Length: 304
Image (cartoon, rainbow, N blue to C red; front, side, top):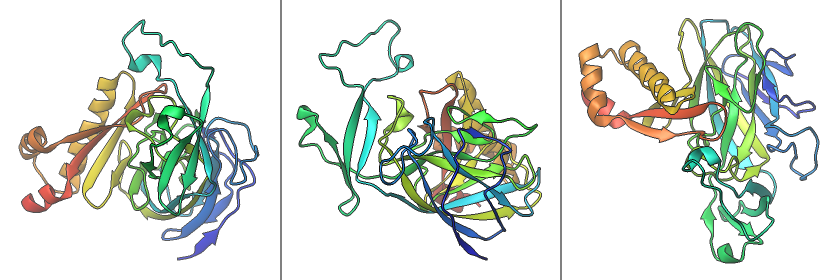
């Protein structure tokens, strides 16, 4: 098991079968950086075109189609003191025809990032000058190369992961991706210092990151959609539009997981989910929405 330190030189605004930047092995760890959604680095300098640029891809030796790649986010931290966000809620989140009227010309807002004290603060917004919010760094867009040579925009998401913008993708979470191509080709980017559910203004507080992740290849485990687990829950992700289709994908993937890994029969699963399932909203802005289906680990420990 090797700890690699990697400095990106090129970035991609699609997740696809790009030339790998580094070959690593099962059990290895990588420390690297990401630029923000606009392509700015830790110095707030433009180093690549905008559009959720990704660091990578990283080739994981031994990963083959039909396997699962498990990625643990060991460290996720902003590496500069200023981020930015949009300030307009997406029309698809509002009643049809609701057009907001603003008495200013703000397109993007700057936010001060205080990593030492774990806070963020809006800059230049008089009504929000006294508002201090907790820093909650997360990864908005990451995943593996999709099948059939596809290169899928970092603006959207599917079975390979992508721009899911779920505020639970924080330090310590382990995320499982289906492997579609040799080496999996893992990409990562689109850091947020903070974000509400749904990314309803089209951004979180966009920021460049220092990230460390470790990888495991689970041979012969074929999953349909991304999965994740943290200290308290197991989670499955559905990426689609309309929203009900994303719910269907996430819920069906949870049923598969509870059956194959927890040994629960179909009736038990259906009765259980009816009373204990939890749902979170991931991305509600981009071409595909993300829904998260969650089950408490404590509940599972009580019955298995």
